[in-house]
Length: 428
Image 1 (cartoon, rainbow, N blue to C red):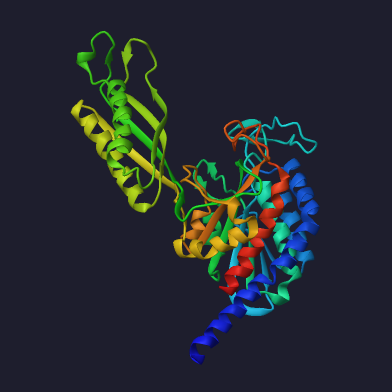
Image 2 (cartoon, rainbow, N blue to C red):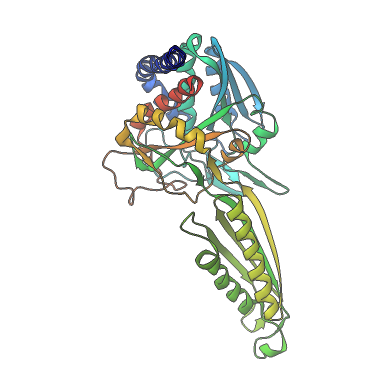
């Protein structure tokens, strides 16, 4: 009997060890809430595009150093990594925030509204934190301050990853993403688990959403070139019409979702976003080019959808006497929350937000480069409410729009849950 009691006592002690740090975390989170809001407003008013986050990176690095955290700058161009060594041995937990803004001109009337401009894709545009990355940075800066204050009681180490270019870099000859670059430079080598959050303008403040397994889609670029034979529009029988063929291909691609994908498990999206072909009303062109996007969940589904796109496009073209070239460029993999890690941390989510405020999210067809970290080590990525209390999610401006808005009263829950992730994981 004693052999059974001793492990139980040890486990109970560990459980108590993790819980006793929560009041200290909550107290500090309340104390620094206004500071976190101030940081966020400053970053919001001074947004920077991907791999240009120089001012933001300096603000982060200066703050981390002031807390006695070891800092590495210039990771993956402008990234900042902070390393906090706990007072007791244990695992290394990584927390990630993305820093980049978007080429969007802000319309929200705020005292800290962005008026910044930049040249993007050869055009002058406004620059705005239209996806909440300013929020992520400010929250993680706050979490660093909270954990640095209790470092002697932390059973392990914490790595703070402030990442550039989550929205991607798309320049001639260069297509890459901040997380991919961070991983390539070894940021995950000594990490045991990684956690991240994303603010949601369509989720009420005080609430958290999560999903075990595939949670956000993989995103791939699609290009199809249909080669026909040019002819006079008055005598189409003398050529091979790539426009008619392309129309049949677009329609045929939609049967992938209705007939090939098991939509009871996960959704998928194949969207043709642009078609270019021809120059004159009475000339059948030689070729038509189509571009689009593919969204899938998990590598097996991704492989199936890619295979069916190629089969449908090439076979329809062949049946018309044309020829189709299919080019698919893989971008972000699917964001997959490790089921075992997720299961262990649900209690942490409920402790931070209250059980009634934690929900299982449906799959999200948007993509996140947090997925690159999850391919290296177990990871959990959650959604944090940023819509005002009582707001209507169907009427709230969405992410990546000029009217995007975040209620700052939800930041304190972000501070709590990210700090809880660290101490709870280390004690589990």
